View 1 (tube, rainbow, N blue to C red):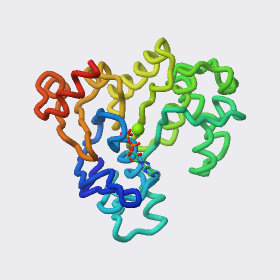
View 2 (spheres, helix red, strand yellow):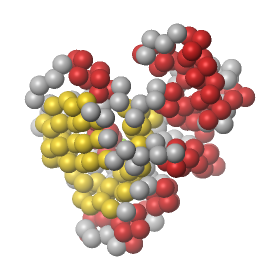
View 3 (cartoon, protein in one colour):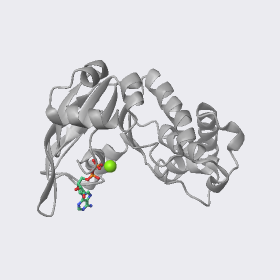
View 4 (cartoon, rainbow, N blue to C red):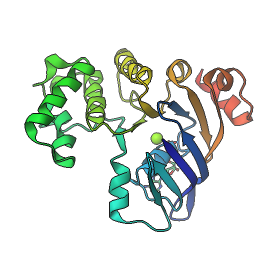
Length: 243
Ligand code: ADP
Ligand code: MG
């Protein structure tokens, strides 16, 4: 479903990602963990060309973009293969929950409004907020806002959903409802890459955990292996500090 080869990213002269290779199967949930400043967000942003990689190729669901040569259409085709869930929800404050979910369908996919509304109503039920269709973000809790953010990602039916620390901005008591929704998506075989500090989630829900440090994937494996038997000293050190 997703294949990355030789992905490298530098900002000015500063190398942030170096020569990353990564394959993700359809239906797989991959958790990405590691110290801050290590390039996790940059990796996600390079996958859909929100950041232009300095080198490398990204293939998602049959669409390949290479840093060497590509067109705007290639990038748009690649972007349609992913949806992003941000730490800060990034909802439109002047739109209702329903309208926020409809937004990518109407504005990006150019679908007729009645059809987009039908889809959005189904999605609201899926994220457990059918009674909040007409609420504005300010009238919703952080957890509810993030569930709308996830709903917006689901609405586009993109094959891959990229989550960048989706629970980091939440009050502790709101984290569970968002993780529960993500767990349900994982069980439904939604392909997802999740940058997270929630080690319990990584351990219990992810099919695979990647540990990143110093701009690279240091080690990866099934959660039971990575958490109980880390090999690299950087992984051991990180896990000792977070758990
Ligand atoms: P993480 O998500 O693991 O915390 P990031 O991907 O956000 O790490 O950042 C990795 C490194 O790249 C950091 O040193 C950060 O300062 C740098 N960086 C990220 N975005 C930019 C940018 N737009 N311009 C310059 N440096 C950046
Ligand atoms: Mg980050």
